Amino acid sequence: MSFFAYLRESIDLKSGIEIQKEKISKYCAYTGKTISKFYIDNDRSAYKYRPNYEKMMKELLDPSNNDEGLICTTLARFGRSTIEV
Image (tube, rainbow, N blue to C red):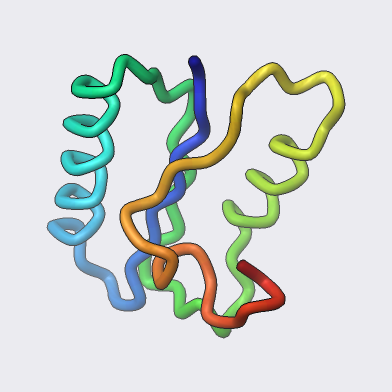
């Protein structure tokens, strides 16, 4: 089972990105999942344009994509509105 992973930090905190990456990696090791690609938007509010989020969504929804889905640490890292999530 292969997944994309999305990481986002509102302010430029490399440590926050690394913490998210570590949590996702531990979860995947425990559940037998693999991450095919990490998409990271550092120093990006959920209300601003997030270039890697847009790229990830296009690739995830591409019919030729073989990944199962998306993993993130919390829904707050993914989006801020019910419509977006």
